Image (cartoon, rainbow, N blue to C red; front, top):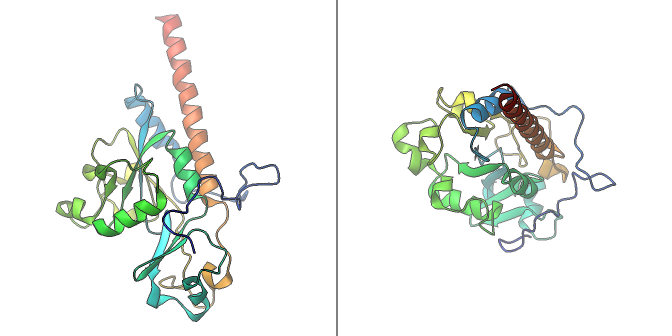
Length: 251
């Protein structure tokens, strides 16, 4: 079983083709929302900045955590270190499975964005998950980059960009699986992602088995989402460059 000291970047191979390139299903789509309007708005207002801000939900977006006591008999093998998953962690009374490709996703996204974690979990839980996702402390480099329920408690039951230090509504994007978790003012900046469920508990499935029970996993979602973000960023930077050239010629 993996430990906090073992995660290594760029070793996730389930999303690579035979030539070592990223591959993902042709049917991939980002649920309910296209990132392009948010990118365009952020870049037009914040054109002097080389990095935007990306706020990341934890549970069902970057990982899945459940209580050990909630594992089904067919999932109990995960308590023993003889399974093939390098990204399963037992922490006290809970077990966490990172979403496939998440380390590579964070590394590549950090080249375009300042990264933040925003969870409705408590500060202790947020710190544990941040250590799994970023063991070298390269992305979430200060306490203000990890936001928990204690930090947004005064804002009520909803998450709000008002709790994100250094961000405003013109320079930030959000990735979360739950639109309803955010204030209405924040939802224009939200990309709703597909919910990641690895364990059976709370899946609401009657006949289907979980990834854990099937001893398999999701394949390609974060890799595809990363390509969407990269393409959006590249296209809009190109448009920005053309506007500057046009302005210099005709002004």
